[in-house]
Each structure stands twice: as structure tokens, then as C-alpha cells.
Length: 348
DNA sequence: AACTCGGGGGG
DNA sequence: CCCCCAGAGTT
Image 1: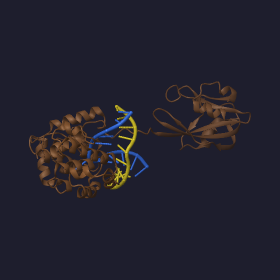
Image 2 (image 1 turned 90 degrees about the vertical axis):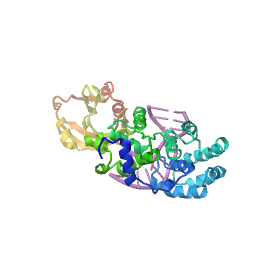
Image 3 (image 1 turned 135 degrees about the vertical axis):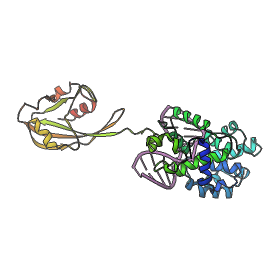
Image 4 (image 1 turned 60 degrees about the vertical axis):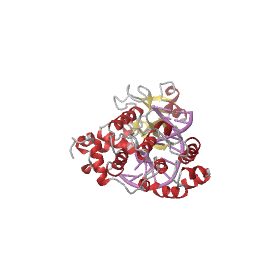
């Protein structure tokens, strides 16, 4: 296949050869069956939906049967599928269709969008798969295919990126075979342009897929920014002399707690003894205090305090390290990070 | 724009 | 274990 044929042409040729055509809701579906399957498939994988779809259509074969059912009976058939608001909205919408749409599926996008549980993408799917009108959809599959094809960076849930993707999806629509085209987009995303291990060698869009040309396919779509901030770990060496002085170190001007006084820090990989040897102290005991959990705006810090009870063998400390012995009462007058200040107040 | 719903599959 | 999946509604 050459890039001289359009995106939709190539997708449709691929669909005729390799697309899925045996799913339960693809067998000459009624608008009700299209709607039901689209709702069940929201954020839910095909293999999970199939048995639920079978049971549901057997029990409620059409809009009227669903509208006449009780909420409890509908929810009972939804148990285990998750997102139960979908079932409540489905039931509510069936009754709206009876009351306001002569028991039929509405025919326009605006009417569909006004119904509970039907957003822009599901409305587009119903308009195409049930009514054979030209509308785009933008589900997880299409987002993945389009972010790769156009090498669009940024999390697709971001409004700006999503608007961009809706525009691309609209521009790529074919003039004919809209239902097959929409199904082909989802099939490509579900079976070939998968999140991991996409089969780009056999993709009908690989000739001009920007991500494929960059060798970057699996870096699209950009993952959602992690909500949990990272956790770093550190250790405080709290040298406390027999005459109750503590060894503090002024931190570098730049970075966390810049210029404030804190305890010398070592990483989990460092050897405690090798580190405190440069303080010129004789350590008589090491006491580990409970880990301190400190939260910054952009990361968490887990601090393991090690109290080194010691005698000072020389006031000469390693040069250029900004290390100073302080009486506790004097230390508390310095500029101290809050966890350092709190900790010093717990010392004798 | 960010949060919530939510069970299951896959890495 | 975390991330993601045929998203939509609420705040």
C-alpha cells in the first residue's frame, strides 16, 4: 500500500481483510444493540463485555423491555462489570426514549448528547454504527492511533491535546462506508496498534506514520502525569557529643533548604562509619530514630535519623564542608528546616 | 481542568 | 504492583 491512497482508504482495505466482524453486537445490530454495546464498552475491554452483553440482550432485547424493567433487575445484570452509573444512566435513558422519542433512538447528535451516559464519542459511534451518518469518535483506540500517526505529544486527556485529536479525527473521515471505517479504527487500535508490542510491520498506515518513522511508536500516547510525587530517601548523621553539642552543616545556597543548617546527609548506599570518621569523633553508640516523612510540593523525603553518641577527638573537621559544632540552645537560633528544628527539640 | 467511578488484564 | 481499557458526569 502506498501513501498516495488516503488514510481511510488504507484503513478500509485493511478492515476488509483483518477487521473483527464476529463480535456479538456486530451481527446486523439494532440501534438499541449499538447503544448498549457502546455503553458496556466504555472503559471496559471487549473480552469482559461479551458475556454481559449476551445476558443483557437475552433479558432485555429492546428499549421497551429495558424501560419496563426495574432498576434492581438492570443492576443485577451489571454486577461485576463496574462503573454502575452506566447501568443507571442506561435505564434512565431507556425511559426517556419511551417518553420523549416514541420509544426510538434519537436521530441527531444533539439529541443523543442530551441523554444521560452518552458523551461525544459514544454519540458519534451511534450516529455512525446505527444511523450511518458521518461523525468522528475519539476513544482510547483512536487516540492511540492518531497520536502515533501524527506524533502528537502530550497526554490525550489534556483538553488542548484532545481538541487537536478531535480535529484530526474529523478531517480524516471518509465520504463512504462510515460504519466500517469507525469499526476499522477501533479494530486497528485493539488488535494491531496496541499499547505495547504494536505490529507496525503489518500496519496499513506505517508508510506515513510519524511515530513509526521516528522509531518512537510506543512512546505515544504520552502517559498521564503521575499523580503521586516521587519519594526520595536520605539519612541524617546526628553527631551528639558527651557535652551535648551537635554537629550541623550549612547546606549549599541552591537546591532544597538552600543555605539552611541541617545534619550531614548520606545515602542508603553509603557506609555510616566511613562517613563519620571524617568528623574526628569516637562513636560510643548509634541509635536509629523512626523514619521522618517529609512532603515537598514536588517530592516526598523519607529521612532515617542516626544518632551518634560520641566524644570529640579534635575540633578540626574536614575542610570546606561547612561543619560546625553547636550547643543545642544555639542551634535552635539558626535557620533550620522545619523537620530539623523539630528533631533538635527532641534531643536532650 | 481535575476528580470520580471500578473491575480486570497485562507488563 | 501500577497503568490502562470502545468515557462521561460532577465539581
